Length: 163
Image (cartoon, rainbow, N blue to C red; front, side, top):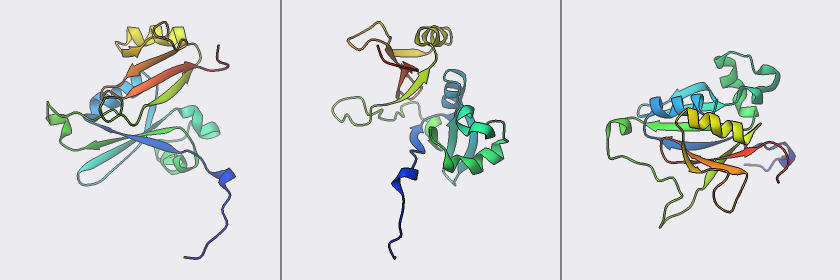
């Protein structure tokens, strides 16, 4: 293949993917707790991929149909892909490795920035979300960590400058 010219200044970090045990549980959590929109579902014979994002990341296309968003998503940033391998939801002992447990630590977390950290944490409390760390705990103040249904860590920070 002949080399062509490319401009890394146009590259975008499009998405990251988590494997999930049960899409009904995980989709509900990401939509209701974090406010994501599931805008596209694609699958194969033994898996389904769900693509979630905040509508505001679609800019002027935020009000577009899910079908249109499925076409637009390759050009935007900040997408979370949830991959469900069929059958895992029926295995009570099945669990994915979050990347944060010994002895094989690796992947750490994703991060969501919010308008008001205290208000967001109060909202998470009312929704029954599980905290790994609250803002007032530990050495790192002004951040929180939630655990999603599969044990993945979601860091929560406030928009704007750090204190």
